[in-house]
Length: 194
Image 1 (cartoon, rainbow, N blue to C red):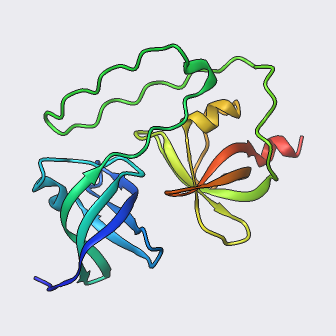
Image 2: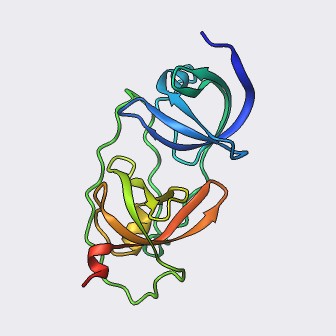
């Protein structure tokens, strides 16, 4: 077992795939990322962490780079801004963490066209690195090679997009948040060409 290189490091969950049993965290001081294996979560009685959750952890040098060796504290991710159509709805209580199985994703419904102006911001080209149907979130790699941009189903719905595919070309606008850049608008490049 490797010796602890850093203790009590604050980091945010970049992404975590419960079905794969691993993910990555981004150090809050911006110095890098570390691998997070599900076995570290198991010691806390958890089987997954939400994207954007903040953790305080110990980091060791793994065979392929830094990895989380222990988690001391977990703070849930701040709630996403509600979609306009979600106002007034009650949120369903979370299912108890039982057998560790991921819930079935809800089918994406076609959203009616709305007379709402799109978010203001310069559209930039990029491509979808990945989109996870279970968490209904993903990352966009900007064409200019900048930092990856997080997006989720709320952004897609507000942009009237039902689904995106890995590698698909898109145009997006983004804003900076505490947890890194987040897309506030996504358009399919194929729609731009029309």
